[in-house]
Length: 321
Image 1: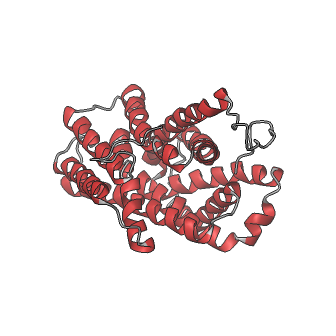
Image 2: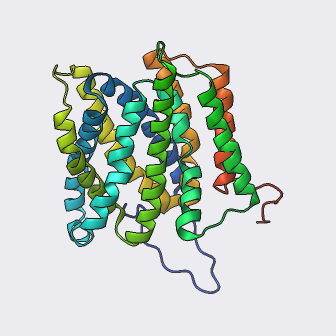
């Protein structure tokens, strides 16, 4: 999706080692931190927008703004032909990749704090491992299975106490909200694996744009039906514009560039940064309260994610460099 940032160099000969630019080798760290900051802010903006728009209109405005942001970039990069050739899987997967999960999270944030929503979002790689196991027979080893158990134990710990919920939320609302977050994570896991199966080799910008077009078309009528009777405030509108442009459109570009520069394993580590930024934003801008129990559960979930994705392995030493 992203264009190469470095100048072309001559191919190394058999006697000369490849030249690695020091700056380029670490440039991915900037993208990683910026992406974590943007995706962490998405929970802040979703909570602000959903309070006035409602869940489905919030998701619809988000993907609509992202579509308008990405389409001109697609045309400028000359990738319209790629989207036209693969429009059916791109638009269909967009419903699972953007439409449904955005709506689920917007609904959940009517009850949960933005920080807790981001912590639950960190379970996406665990669900991805389960889906890959089911669809691609990618059986996890013992270390990754242990990670799945630890991660889902952390989720159960969160669900067992009212840490990170809005004041006045009853037990049924809390369970529905947590269920919505987990449903969103399952959607992300399926969409990632379906993208791997049906859109492999398609330019990332075409895939990203197509997904936003598909999500916009899917959510347009339901959002119009549930559109708020009272016009939302300018603050809510600005939150959704920022959500669509920065946290969705720009974040997609950064994410695929991060995969290109650093590889998927390093790109996956953004999962650990998103809750940190989301909790920070929630405390500073929304006055959310963070409990010791919530932080403990977050640590348990992060440990589970690290093991279940293979980023950390038990009983193995790193290979000598």
